Image 1: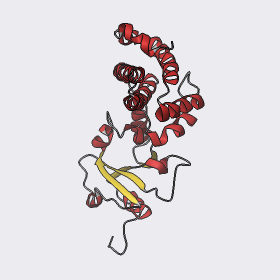
Image 2: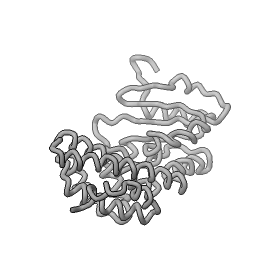
Image 3: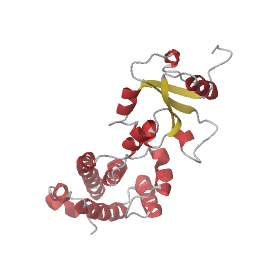
Image 4: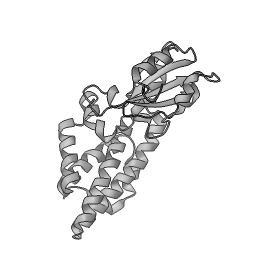
Length: 245
């Protein structure tokens, strides 16, 4: 493509479809999330090439314009993408444009969307401890009159809480942009989506200690049911400060 004729999404799909070395095209981001497209949305596209194959499309690796953002990878590299990593949620909810592997691309995406049992268990333990730590600091700072520190720690705790809740359900946590979208379509078991989002909004805006403690009570019950009671018990008497008074 020339400077006068920049590469478009449709043109790239046409080129890739005609290239037998390309085994998959995967669209991620807002265009893979119904109802999330805006006039600023570009096309974030993975071009998956058969291992050991060569393709002229390699010249477009790293191509990035307001319309099209390309990643050209081998099949092996695509299997490993986001496993673990920040990209995992994006690929878990990606849309398949081309799958020449008889459903193989779909199976790879399904694997990214579901955490392994041991992986989820271990991740949840780490996120639970981080959540308790930030919550404890927030409540303690509030008690001691450190308003800004209390609010910042409360905001930190939200991240860890969400990581925990999604790990307990063996799912990668969505990006903040897609949190409401994800929960509307795939609610967390045992949680009222509207109440959870309202509480998170309240905490992030005000650091409300009573709301933080109410959420902790629910998270503690879920964590103990999942076998993580020892992580909480290690906090000893400090748990009293986190719990509703």
